[in-house]
Length: 228
Image (cartoon, rainbow, N blue to C red; front, side):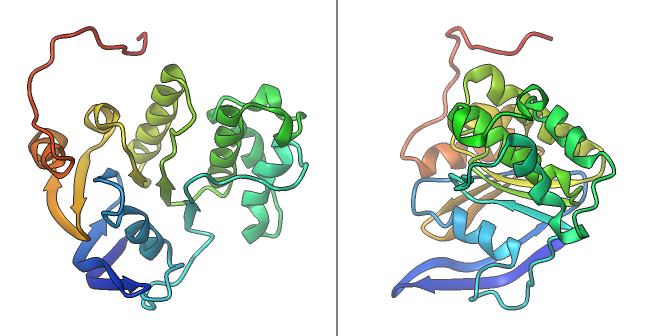
């Protein structure tokens, strides 16, 4: 579906990615993890086709939806109008996709509200609805659960898991390793611009902990999990 082959990227004289080979296939939910400055956002931008240093991959808005970190709408649009922006590559034709995306993201009841008059977490879900309204095959998301409370984090991660299970593909930058372990089918760990681990979450978690300068150990303290 999408592949990078031995990509190296330097920005402002600093090497950000080093000889990275990466691919994503349908049915997968890939979590990109690693410390700040590891190259996660640069890798995501390369996959999206918006990185000049990776000219072989062109953006395809009919197939790929890219949601940058901290994405916000600067105009006083309604939540529905924000989601409808995801239909622009299709000439604005809707066919109920906007309402379906709003419902998926749990903001259908806010459709008539202005985007600048809802909470930060609700606005983030509206931006995710914009990405889903285009019915993409590949979702590229930079910290999609930032600003969300714990129940909403699980709701979004379940939504992404369902998207992948239906045959789509997701690559998401995540800082919450517990969410990555619970929902991702694959964990890719970056450190100093290189991929240091790539595999099932339980196999890659020790490398993720090491990348953060931590160790992985059993923890039997109470853990918040969603009601089933």
